[in-house]
Length: 255
Image (cartoon, rainbow, N blue to C red; front, side):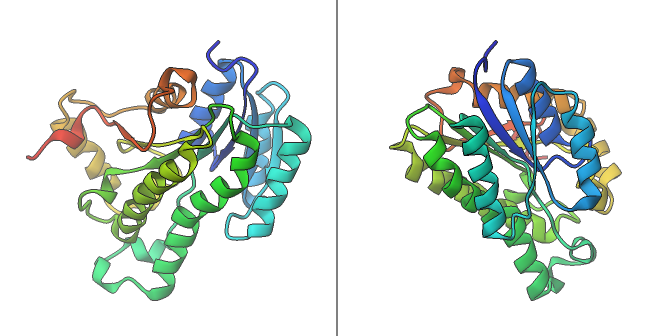
């Protein structure tokens, strides 16, 4: 049991197809006690139903655009868990209209929202988590995408957000390394989730990857969860500031 006796918190569980949920479930299978957060009443029912399948979970509301919400979450985690071994940041959001048409037409507000929710939240969460993780060989993991490295049609402002997220992860890895906290990212290939439903032409993206990735197939949530287990556990104790691509090798291709 790679995470026996460990505690962790997972942000970004929307439903049973979420990558964040696949990671939470896998971590629980390996012995971790898990806290899940949800944003708003619309997602609360899903979060509580999923959490009910875990052993002794903690389920908390959190709007990551509000610093006071994040502080309250970690205050509760401290009270319930005492300390923290890992954090999973699986949050990404952009206004639907910003994922349509050309990136050139991105609005100032649409840009701000994508950066605030999808990027700054990692820094805000890491800042509150650090005191609970210091000296424990802890791990912070975020979820990114190839659209932050290369142009993916229809990804638009989210691609810019992922690029900023990637660099945030690296700066946080440098800041937190002296405290014994590692920070890494998984760049997952396209998977059918609630978030991907908002990307125009997503079925074509899946087909293209299936036809051109070295393994000639798409990934599934369990493959991301297994990679996350490596990065959350002591097996990756010498790894920080890295992006692990879980995409059947698609990221290496030029054509």
